[in-house]
Length: 560
Image 1 (cartoon, helix red, strand yellow):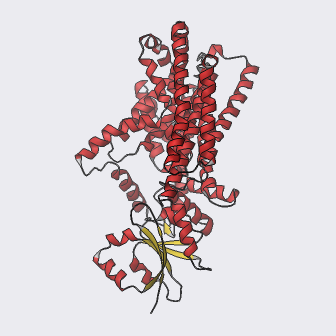
Image 2 (spheres, helix red, strand yellow):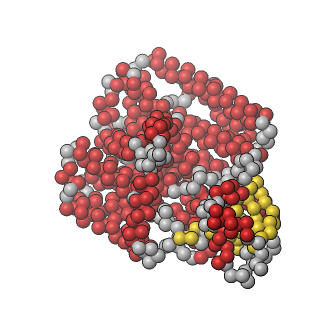
Image 3 (tube, helix red, strand yellow):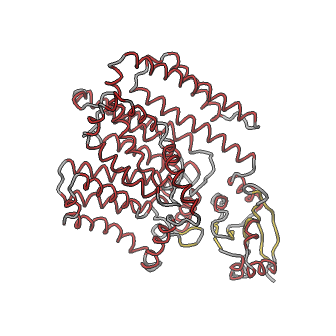
């Protein structure tokens, strides 16, 4: 893979190759993600995003979101808007439609990396980086979910590359800062102030490295801030009708402060030890390409790689932001995932320098081809072995399980038989597809295990639906987001109550149905327990939920 701009083909061929690369990026992204987004139950923060979007469609409140009837301001609404819009286009919010925005966001991130790095990388390197972005394991996990992270990764990547392109091409300072900070303001609507943190940590560190901090403290930067503030004011003007600004600010302060709290000293030590490993695993398998850089012969060519301004900027982005999340005891690895595209950029530049090194020594090329064959054989063995183990535990041979295993075996057999016919540059495509196929394999296995163990929230919701009387349109959910993973599947209006005592405030002429999980009863205080014991109600049925003996109970209130 040649990384030199001088080796790029003439304009006509370059245009044709650009079209081909774009089609491949889009097709491979869809091939990886589309099979992953259907059928797998919502998990993690997905139920929250989905429930808010459902409330938007039901109530028409798009600016000030609610979650099962309660004001929800913990996260801004952009992802909820996209889920609701996708649900409208595809005829309802389900697992597939709710995850389409994340799939498109990851595909767009690959295209952004491909097009916005052309001043520093050759076509092949840009194609490599784009495919690495859409197939890093941690990013695939977010691209197949209805969570905010895929959209946030796209936002941060776009903002930083826009700034670097404008800075390198000599945009007028006011235009550069204004455009970048306008995008930061828009990105606020994804996850709050986190995009601004990535932007300022990266840009300030980069300008410090280049000894241009005066540009950071320029009047143009101050004027550019107005563009970002304008976006926030439009959003906050509607939001602050529901709550005072001090309360909104305190909410964000509490969220941020909670990430730095650790009740036990060993909790911080555990986080410091595990976070780097988990981060490295999130950027697999591509991060392994950094290992050849340790070789003596390769290190001699590293200066050329470090002369690339995009590589330097990407390294600054990683090193400036990593300590922040590493040192916060309650920070999750997903907070650092926006570094993924920049890791891919650095790896693409490194991979471009490996070719000339190894081509000078034919014996090493032979060794690499042998390594490719060994990896292909191991992959060929692993896929059917995983299927056999899954079937031995009582799982069924589903279509995703069989199809993914067959495709892995066929592709690995081809690579094992003809490793010499596959160049280092072209390895990126089969590896990208392997990541997607193995993800599909394990996703289907985990989904089947949830059903077998009775832990599927979708299955629990279906069981509850069957217990609900005909004509029932509303149900009250007791406990703050305790069973949201189940209630987000119900085809009823769900109203959240914090405790049983709030049931007494409902009009007595209303037929009151409510849901709670039995583990909630173990956490009632004396006053709540007294009310529960005195409450007149009848149990209509229950469904198992999660592990152990926890179950969801459907009840109907009896008024005297």
